[in-house]
Length: 138
Image (cartoon, rainbow, N blue to C red; front, top):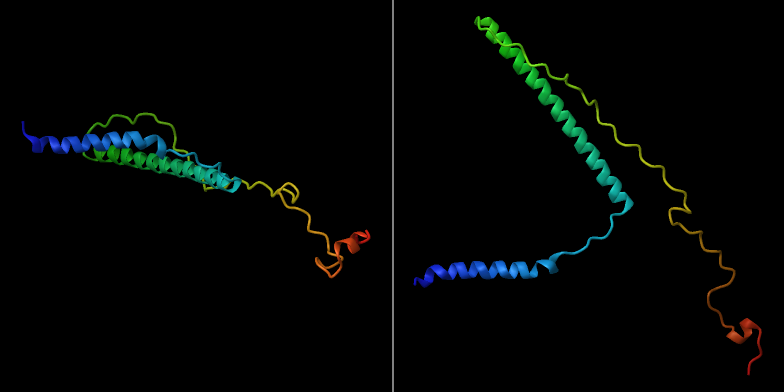
């Protein structure tokens, strides 16, 4: 038996086994996205969908130009070109319009708290706790 051939196979099998054994420990649960991150992701998804519509529109227009040019060239050399297959008209998606941003919630709903009350005395003084509470010293 030829040992040098088996050595790389054994190493590959060992790496695969270790990788599969450690796979469950490498999976972690991500925290829930913040509302800002969620809004940003939704905006990116909407912009990507619009970009796809623009690309489809441009492709449709270019296919129409190629078909028209083919028919024109065929007619110029005297060939009989088959009539073009009926396809739906190209629809222009128009300019991108960002989704309307949700109005900002009121301060109470946003988690803001009322400001702290104005201090009427310094936080520390020379008076003892008995003097502050009005109880006599023992």
